Structures are given as C-alpha cells and as structure tokens.
Length: 401
Image (tube, rainbow, N blue to C red; front, side):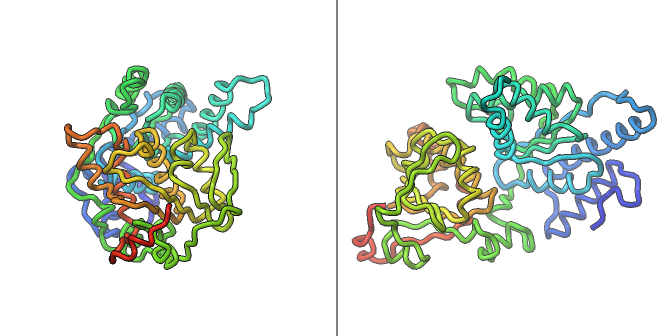
C-alpha cells in the first residue's frame, strides 16, 4: 500500500482513508473510539503538512505548534497499532521511539559523559536534544511513569519539545492524572501532568475488543498467538510447579552450582544461576533488589532466552512479591516482549495474572502486593503457553525453583 503522500495532497481525509485501508488489510474495522482517535491524528498530520509547506515558502515557522495527541486506554485496544499506521502514512521528518528505548538512550548519554566535567543534567539534556533533532514529530509508545527519577526525565523531554516546537503523539495505558500513581511521589509529578494537559489533546480509546487476546486473522498478534514458533516471545511458557519432567520437555535443565555467575549489566551486580546460551535467574535476584530497566535492556541484548524461576503467585501474599518487586517484574516483561526474547516463567503457582487483576479491583484485598501494571502483564503473558501439573506424582517431583 502506498503512503498517503504518494501522488496526492496529504490532507486529513486522505490520511484517514489510508488508515482505514490499513485496518482493512489487517482484517478488521476500526471501532468507534479508534476511528475518533484516528480522525484526531489525521488533523495533526494535515497541520504538519501545512506547517511544512509554509516553512518551505518563507523559511520561517509562522504557525503555532500543532497540538500534541495523548492516546490512552486499556491494554490491547489498538493504541500502538493506530499510532504506527499513522506514522507509516505520514511523510517528512519523523521519529518513533518506545518508552524503554527512550530511557536507554538517556542512560547511554549519561554513561558516555562519565568522567567528564559536565553534569549529569547536561548529558541528559544533550540526549533529549539528540532525540528531538531533525524531526517534525515524535511518536512515543507505551508511555508510563512509576519512578520519580523517570518523571524528571519526562518533564525535561516535554519542556524541550515545547521549546523546539515539536509535537508528540503518545500512547499510554494511563490517563495523565494516573501517571506516577505512588502517593509518596505523585504530587511531585502534578506540574508535569499539567504540562501534558496544556500541550496535548487527551483522547481515550476504550473499545470492547482486546486485540491482544482476540487477534484478528492475519494480524501480527494472530500470527504470534496462532503460530507461536514465528515469534520468540510466543515460544515461551509459564510452567507450574516446575518439575524436572516439565522443564526437560523444553530442554531446560536446572543449572549446577558451578554455572553460577555474577553479572554487572550496568551498575548493579546480579547473581544468576547460569549465563551461557540462556540466562537463568531467580525472581528474587532479578526483581527483589535494585535492578533497573536499563539493566534489563542490557541483559536482553546478550541473552535471547530467559528462565525466571521461583516466581511467586501474584494472587497470594508473599515477601518476594512486594509491590516494588512486581513493578520490576512488569518492566522485565515489557522489555522481553518488546525485544522479542523467549521467556520461561517457573513457579509453584498459581501464576494467574488475570485473577490477580480481579483481586486488585477488590477493596477487601491488599492491593499493595499486586503488580502495578497487572492488566498489561496479564495481556502480554497470555501469549505464553501454560504447562501445569496433570498428575499427583508430578507434584512430588517438583524441585526448589
């Protein structure tokens, strides 16, 4: 399919026609909320075209910056698909980046300046400037803020985008007011939330269909779920309780003591059970300490298969499954999903994130122990096959994973 710019003037109606055709080629029809969001994106696309035309004629940006767009809604409602379709049809200078890639670039910029007289804040500003240089629009996928430090980076990005007059398209599972939900830090982020509302039109996509769980025929999600061998992440499994027979069926053999290693992906030391053709690590080591998303990204570059054992049940109280640990686990799942890494989760069970989401909605349950992003975790982990004990003897064989 040719982009909307091929041989025709790019206006909102032409761009909308291309997005509709893109959906048709993928085997589905835009739901009303998706169509409304697409229409708003098309208005932005037209405004960018008019703005570029004026710049070519006069050499000056006389028109005000087009308003940015913030798309939010539950997982699986097509936010990223819609932004990607818009991005493909849009001509001109553009950049698309994922939330985790954004922070990886920031951390690389800071590490590159280590030992130099410039302050970290200067290095961060230079990384943000590099991200926004030579583009007319920045598309930012899976936007979320759970850490006050990340909130500071986001504020710097928004301020710089406003100064450079670069509009943004953002997708998120959260409305702006629910970003950085931790009550200890939320007030610190309120001014940035105000900046988001000032710069962006807030558009909710809340259709009835979860496309990750009910993928349309021929879509990427359908290929991932119907033929998991085509995608590395989809080849993974959730295994309970983790008997030798269950693990051995997938070529997984618990490492010996001699295979233990200490890794330092960025600045934190991580004790792992094995790090050769695959990374084998316990939930407690991976998520119970001070590892960051930057650490997980660095590890994902080196290991294409991960085994995380000792995974606590998200539906039962556990010291291992504290709120910070579950947030790190959420970051791990995000990274491995986005980087298409094969993931095996092993635990005594039950490892049911759908049920955990139901419990999180129950005021009588201690929600503090639930994963912060339980809905996104449940949606992504639903792509993994399940291997569960089918006979009493299997329970008896269960090892200490």
